[in-house]
Amino acid sequence: MAEINTNVRLKGEEQSPEDLKWGNDLNAALKAARKGREVLMHYFGRLEQVEEKYQAGIVSEADKESERIIFAELKNSFPGCELLGEESSVDGMAYSQPSEKGRWIVDPLDGTTNYVHRFPIFCISMGYEINGQIQLAVIDVPLLGEVYTAIRGRGAFVNGKPLKVSSTFNLKDSLLATGFFGQDEKQLDEQMPIFSKLVRQTRGVRRPGAAAYDLAMVARGVFDAFWERGIKPWDAAAGILLVEEAGGIVTTYRGQKYHPYKNSILACNRNLHREILKVISPLTAADTE
Ligand code: IPD
Ligand code: CA
Image (cartoon, rainbow, N blue to C red):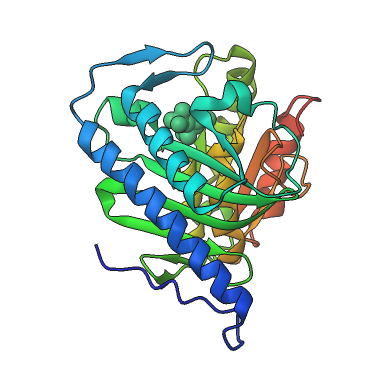
């Protein structure tokens, strides 16, 4: 895979000491993701331990080892930084509030079900959050050889090439994506009517099975929008910055600005946001935020 240029600059300006710092942080994050990628490539097709998590799908030795190795690398490069990862989230869920000092939010394997079944869409997702805002993002998609990166104010990229959301104007010309958890009856009862309406009004709705990847596809302009209820901080943290930096908009189902501790997400190009929200909002439960 080609080296990624981490020589970042604030849009339209000369490189500053702050740009340099973010460039170094991106380098360190890419190194951690690379180590996670090696773990995922090693276990792909060779898993021996797949377990059910309580109301949270499945987990394998690859998820756990990838998180362990990414955290070790992040602790080394960012001493004292808070870490929130899917596989250590029993402790991590204590973090339901934004971080003042800075926190890495990591999904060491997004798309575990795909991975276990050898469907090639899965990724590592890492977002650095301060006060609810993601500042730096890395999404590494091992089998596609794609690494998505973003630093706030400095653009979003795939393997170093700039990303831009789509400019699709009409819902009838759009391709959307969604995700949902199949073991939550309440959530399914809410999501299926939305799916049913939008699939009729668009060219199609995809459900690739890895939210971070779906968000990267919105940032790339492949999908015009992505929505999901019950999304977790580690699924969305990196992807939201990619979408915003690629010119898109990310809100809750209520149209409020999204941050990684909200439970619903609509990531979209700016032209279609209002129209899709008009479909989603009335069909969602009162406790949606
Ligand atoms: C899941 C995937 C899926 C989404 C779920 C996530 P995991 O993550 O991103 O697409 O619909 O909400 O939990 O469990 O594969 O890391
Ligand atoms: Ca995961």
